[in-house]
Length: 287
Image 1 (cartoon, rainbow, N blue to C red):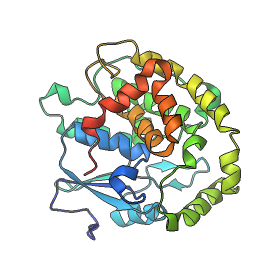
Image 2 (image 1 turned 120 degrees about the vertical axis):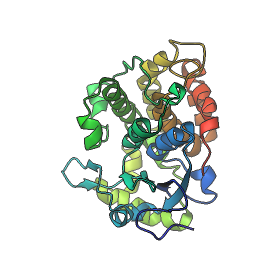
Image 3 (image 1 turned 30 degrees about the vertical axis):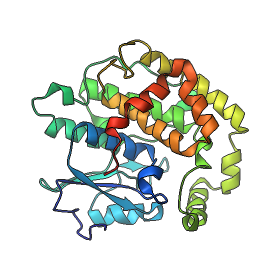
């Protein structure tokens, strides 16, 4: 049962707030940003409990937790998102997936270098200026960081988000919300966009066209994964938060795409994305 205490569940070290999808939620959970954080939490072997939040209750939940919006819409209004992580032992509240990874790295890596979420590596993946407009704004913390490698990971996160967000119509129609919640959730998204849900889904054009666009857009990303062939991660056999950033989007595609399209995506560019998705399974437990 969800905790009723504003600061989380004191019986566990961490409380992790994620978006509620249909039952069984362990199979339907697919929001990319919470999954980036979940991979990081599991990689760090962090003891936590998940609390599920209805899509239309995210703003009120953050407010009840005392977690301000980490981002702004382009019009300057608050952009309330999940995940949120509550460190119950230290009364710390972090409300952005990238900031969660930074917090874990700064406070819980300890002396084990294998648990470093941000090892040194070249993350020279850039998206076109046309796609950059699709990148959700970074949190103020990620925008303002002055640490070189963290800044590089933050920019990588933004570029990956832009590429997949630009082609998100592929996934929108397959979002696994409970049947009785779909009309209200679609109406909310339509209101934000200022158009009908059906028009939103049709805006990008035929699925074949969007798939072709995604194929080309992630080709340079695939080339990064092909630099070290010793393993499925960007650093070969060693996972990092950069892998979790991409993995969050792959999880969304795995759940939302028709099976034949998912099989296409995982086979693209030598199968690097299918290999990555499979390799992240040890860090994919939904607690």
